[in-house]
Amino acid sequence: NAGVMQNPRHLVRRRGQEARLRCSPVKGHSHVYWYRQLPEEGLKFMVYLQKENIIDESGMPKERFSAEFPKEGPSILRIQQVVRGDSAAYFCASSPSGEAFFGQGTRLTVV
Amino acid sequence: QKEVEQNSGPLSVPEGAIASLNCTYSDRGSQSFFWYRQYSGKSPELIMFIYSNGDKEDGRFTAQLNKASQYVSLLIRDSQPSDSATYLCAVTIGGSSNTGKLIFGQGTTLQVKP
Image 1 (spheres, rainbow over the protein chains, first blue to last red):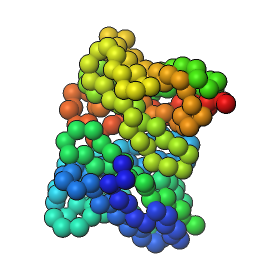
Image 2: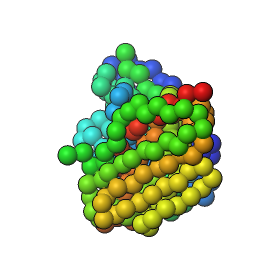
Image 3: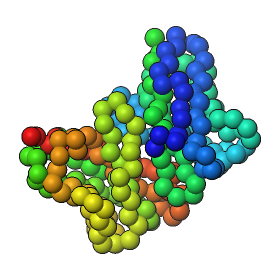
Image 4: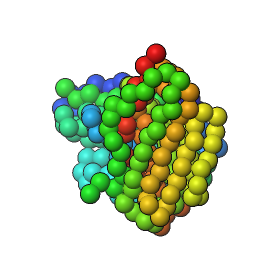
């Protein structure tokens, strides 16, 4: 769904740097989900947020990863001290309360 | 055992034929089922969802659900080369009504040959 906006579309980071991925949901959608798609693997749920609240972070790695969805502004997925294994496509999806629609994704490459 | 299982393919069909994509899932409590299409390098695009046993038709697409057999399928009639993509089956976590938190299969690659 073109309404879910993610940026940047491509991000290159050196090992040890921080990566910040942004997601603006479809206007009026209050539910945001982050997914990761590793090369040659399926989509994996990471975290579910509503405005100012993390509802379910059961899919988030225990360290280095965090997410937020502030009252104003986009949702942010933050990866600290990136490693090569973090290279993947990260997709954000939003939903009003039903079916989820995905943004175009951010392709993170760690060099 | 994988929670959502799909044949990775590739499934190759001639243009104009019916493509049949299959998916099985392990959690009997799953309530909602989705088919997404993903072109190479692009994002998943929702094409069908089904919540009740039986068939659901939308244009050239028909989703079929059999909860007793834990099986969901997607039929694409009059397949076109533009249908060539990876088709992802996704299901909700058992006992949850959250239709955004999904378990995805690995996807089936469909090739429609002119």
